[in-house]
Image (tube, rainbow, N blue to C red; front, side, top):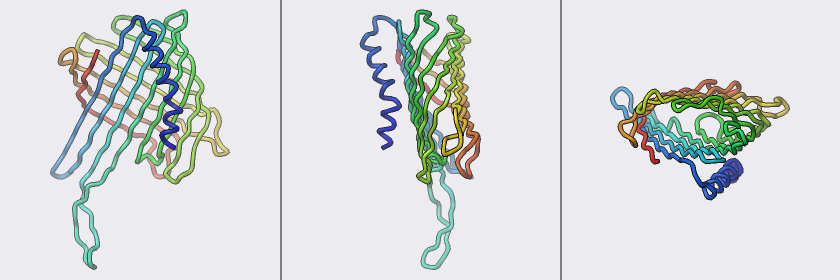
Length: 263
């Protein structure tokens, strides 16, 4: 069932990406992979891993992006267990965070190359958010408001639909308006900054409809070692106005990762 929903959300986007690649006569593409690993010992014992892939294309008539993000964290803690009527303290390693996210967007450029029509699909699986998974599909209008050799600013706006399932088995679904923006600036050939933001605004609420407003922001600073290898410092947060029961409204993440770029 999850595979079917993932296919519905991203299949159309990936098909468009395939067609655009096949028909591309000129343009540029870039693939970057990201990896981070952290372990601690002593007073705290934790292991965490972060993976990400970002593939972008800028062709004559198409601008495409495919993103994958995943991460997990395990903590080792002392717990008290009963064995043969006796209590004893043992160390147990448990997973305290596990999530992954996949999205695809394809923009078809209009006569004014800064304007485009887009189709977007995403799927998110967050084991400890109270929401088992959520898929989103959106179409709309995109515009590149600002573009120089060093800086770009893009803005997307369009209607969509999302569907998710809670940990208790209940579902949440509804129509929405998705707003998103991307700002990129290159300070010099070796240092660059990127900021992305998006919000899902429900069109209707009540009567079983999804009333949650979800907002995401990511800030990242990349420092290149050479043309292919770089270090990335990033900070991101996700805010939900109506989180699941006993869950916080705000989640934040700070990470330092190594990035390898192809193309």
